Every structure is written in structure tokens, then in C-alpha cells.
Image 1 (tube, rainbow over the protein chains, first blue to last red):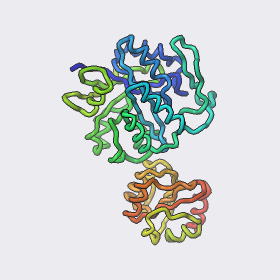
Image 2 (tube, one colour):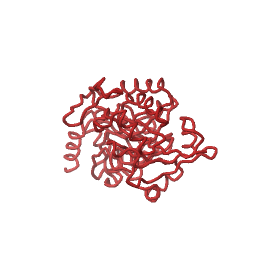
Image 3 (spheres, one colour):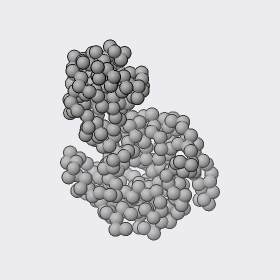
Length: 250
Length: 111
């Protein structure tokens, strides 16, 4: 078994709130400098940068978890990950079907662009990506699991866009693969106020919107290798695999 | 005023929980954040929201609310409706938006 540092929640320049410096090339370079072994690419309601970043990261020995941070109808943010580009593109079709057609006003929300390895803009996304889908959280969870993905409610301790802020508490029958807490709190602090969640696996991530934040806080996954199936096992705590949280020292 | 009275006066649809139509109403609360409702709504109030998730029933039950009104013609999700029938807390639906509906309910309860 080996320990892998995983920052499973980062935004690229594709997210309207993602800094323009958050290009695929820069993200991979900084992740490498910061000692991140596993990097989650989770733009708001879009997966379009994940495959390129995976290709670039592979050359640096970094494993990429391809996904998105979905906003459900209840405005709950959830991390969703998929193992293959094929499954990821199936999920992208679902996102395109269910994202409201509200144009992005770059003045207020920022740019939503897909760039290539040379940092040239290859596509600009017209519809605002931070809107809520017209799908409830149970529907999104079902879709993710239908595509054999991982479903992780994001920053559940936060007062905005978290499952707890929007729905009051975590529905006990919602099938989550883990829960994410933000970098502003420790797991013990969170659990002291939310004892009913102590049986769940937690991850902690940077939610980086700027290159400086990448890898600021990571989850430490003990497992055999950096692969999707091993990560799934680690989240379940199977066969000696574990997930521990670190608080960043920056 | 009872839940049945506001159903009649505001032209609401009864989606579920009709056993609770004789519940007494002592006010209202309008919010879409369930954590906010949990913290601020009071017993026997009517809650106006656009949330349709099952958790609305857990909050309504915990806070002993008189009824929930969904706005803009929304309907409860199936498991929310089921829970509403079990608890006898009605889920009602209005074609109006929260602003108009809240104003009308406020007026009714003031009288």
C-alpha cells in the first residue's frame, strides 16, 4: 500500500469563477510542484476540460479524476466523477440537457472558456454554468451511479450551496460515496456539530479557483495504486484502504 | 383559520396529506433554505417554498408546521407526498410565485 495526496476539487478557467491562470497546462504544473498525486477536475456543471488535463497530467505522473461540480435543482453542489472519457461524455450530454439556457454575462460572472494545450481558446460556453440544473439531487445521484461514477456532496459544512444549507441535513437514504468538507474546518470540528454523520467517509479538498490554492489541502488515500477502482475502495474503506484528511500548512 | 380555509380562499391544490386540512394556522414563513426554516419557522405556521425534496417533510414534522405550500405550480416528489400522507401535514400547491402568494396569505391571516 502507498499513500497518495488527492486534491479532488479544483476549478479551471472554464468555470466562470475560475481564474484565467487556471489553464490545463498551469494546473498540471502547479499540482506537480505541490506534490499532488491525484487531482480532481470539477468545473461547475461542465466536464469539458477534464480529458485534456488528464492527458497532460499523465505525463507528470499525476492521476486525474475526471468530473464536474454539479449544481442540483436545490442548489446543492455535488462532486461527480467518472472513470472513462466515454462515461464522462455521457454525463456531459446529461448536463447539456438539463442546464437552463441562461446566457453568461461575463461582466458579472467571468469567462467560460475551453483552452487547448497551447492556451488558445477553442470554445466559449454561452450558457451560465453556475445555474442549477432542473434535476433534483436524487436524480443527479441516480444518473451518476447509473454511469458507475462517484457522487460526493461538496463542502457540506458551508452556509451556501451545501446539502446541509439547502436541505437542512443529509437525507439518510441518499447514496453518497463520501462527503467533502471545505478547508476551513477540521473533520472533528464538523462532526462535533453533526454527530449523525460520523459513519461516513470524508474527503477534504482545496476547491481551488486560483493556481495558488491547488493542493492547499488534500485527502491522504492509502491504497495499492492511483486508479478509479482503488479510490472507490478507499472511500468504502475496503481491504485496509483508508482516507485521512490533512489540513494544509499554507 | 384552518388549512382548509386557505385552500379555499387562495385556490390551492391539495397534493397530499389531506388528513391535516383541519390544522389550525398561526402564521407563515417563506424561505427556500431548509436550514433557515429549521432555525426560524415556528409551530403551526404555513411554509411557502419552491423546494420539493423529501426533506421538506422532515423539517415540517420537526417544526410542527401546519402545511407546506409549493409555489409556481410545483408538485412534491413522490416520497415527499408519501411522508406528508403519513404525517398528516398537507402539501399544497399554488400557481403563483412566492411574492404574490406570501402577500395574499399575510393579508388573510391579518384579518
